[in-house]
Image 1 (cartoon, rainbow over the protein chains, first blue to last red):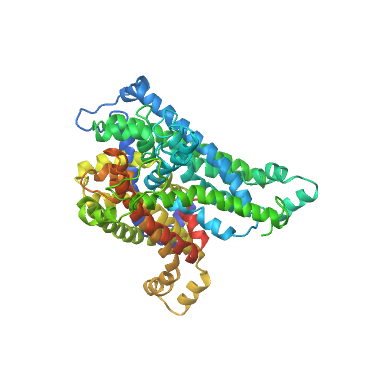
Image 2: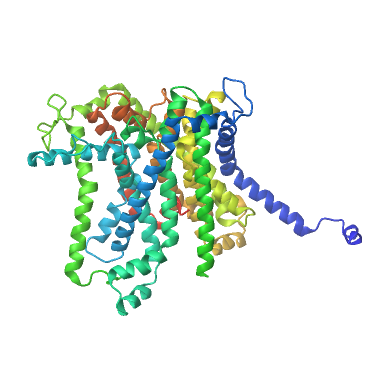
Length: 298
Length: 281
């Protein structure tokens, strides 16, 4: 083997070419990826390190697990994590049920379907603060529903700034159903018509077709959409900060308070690392699931 | 696409249409109308329960756009930042999108994951990292800083849309241009860029709207000197006392361009650009 290597010392044309191609790739990728490396990866690494007491701002830095111990010991921080998990799960489940029904019904032809398919996408472009305002004018105690119910002597419950975060969940559902519906109806329109028609011919009821064919065949879309919504909602800031109660607060709200009010970047970084780690774990599980499903379908 | 498995016959379809339009008007149209009404409430009379519609309407709140400096300033700030962010994203995304769309890359999966990360990661985490980094760089509370942080979250959409567009360009056209003697630069300028213009337009639209709407990063990095429309809206709704009438005006200013742009997008753009933007994970 050594003789061979010595026998052909010159670099082949193919190698030169490959190196040139590689260089072109690098030059082309540099602007976009370079920007993300500098302005996303570097700050994220800083957050991760700062969570362990390194790179501290305004105090001596040394490796410590103290910040995480502080998070675990502090009831406010712990409750904020649990509260965020709670409303993220609630929003995901409710949005999923609603968008499954909407997407399935959108597969049927009906008069005005085009208009509906444009209308339902409006919340996609509505900023979350605007969504909060719009829903607030409807469901707040002085909102339209409570005003409409007043003559009938019906007392409208407090849905905003409540302990159970119902207002938060409502606005988040309003905002996330269209995202899920876009993904799910794309997946559902890809299900071959023959399959559902065959099931109908064999005597399955519409519900059985939905339950046993449409839902299982849309599973990749369902898991992708749920994951996307869950992670997005778990770290949501603007809606919980506007509609949330004084206690418990969402984890993003606690983080922003630590940063803006107390300039406690260390604790905020520890919380941020927890949020990131949780998102990363979910993503990893999702990729594993997808691979299994793809393998099963093959 | 004729799926009759759920509800056969014409009456069922009309029922479905009525149901859909009923729900849509309840959750989409009525909130929008109420929002418009709030922006038109006469501040001298107000709009108190149990009135379902305000008893007196006026344009006084809209005049506040001109008379209340903070609303006008936020408006100018938002519409100053958005085009800069859009241009920056386009310039950064064109070469990278080309590489992702047309070239055989090693480590493609890693690169795609890197591009996807800012879309998935919670904004508050990025804001914490960038906020402290920008304090050290002297970029916090500056317009430059806000432009840079908005670019972080909007660049991925642009890259994905541009890459999807480049992927759709037929290789024949490129080969033909090459055979006719086009060198790389004229090839890019006269063949590739005109062919990907629709995608670039779609990406630009997304980025522009995204920049107008971006809140968390602008809030953490720009506070309190760089006040865009969403930051002002947050202040009106929660920060101090809630001023519904001004909030409604800011809401309308934010909503009208985005909804108009969305209808333009729906008519002119192919669905696949939207799908690329929204990110099928």
